[in-house]
Image (cartoon, rainbow over all chains, first blue to last red; front, side, top):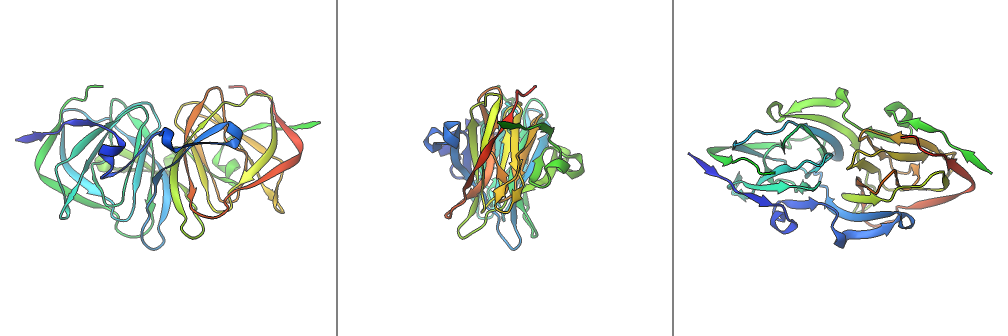
Length: 166
Length: 166
């Protein structure tokens, strides 16, 4: 018995409970560098909580997931935000859940396309990176420093993401 | 009269006086997420100095530069680091200078290729974004918040970057 999860379009509004979408939003554009560059400003804000915490930049190289995919766990980072921006044109899946009294609710699945990235706010439940199609690199901005910044939860039931139609 | 600038290969060692190279360095690799992801950890550290400062994520869309290019100015951000990671496979130029008593020395020009990004440490003199070939998007992680975080300097003489051989 497994509950099927629909795949939703990633929009700033739909994703607002979990964080922000990192994409060139015209509303945040300003011209800089003598008109040679457009800056899409402050698409996301990084959180790094706790003593001696810092914001670090990493690359994550994710293997592609196979479908149908069984979602059986989620994780969250209580001390910091975490962003993922694809360094390839390939889409990827963003799987998140609202918190219900300390555990994740039913997962929601968003398809990030056209180079869209996302930033999870601190303490937002999410599934580990789900690359699609081929091994894919992502720029990841998150928290470094001492302290326990990982919480995991195993669901008592399985959820299924059927084949992704790209 | 203009001084010609050679274009150097971007390596972590050559770039060390100015900041770090953001690329999947095998020495920083660790396996995470049950073996589905390789994390290249802490390739760069973000600096955001001053009251109410934060680290923000932006997209810069740069117009391609034309060559020969005359370098006539530099800038620096005393209150924060600034990283550039290309969201396309196109190379770009990284133009930096050491500080000599409050003004930039002769520029050095590095060619970032194969998706390499860089992070300028706070207060490092650099030229504004120099995209190559086509309009190109970059993920930029830098400082947001109050305070004067921009200093510019106009060189008394011109420096020239000749045609880039890609």
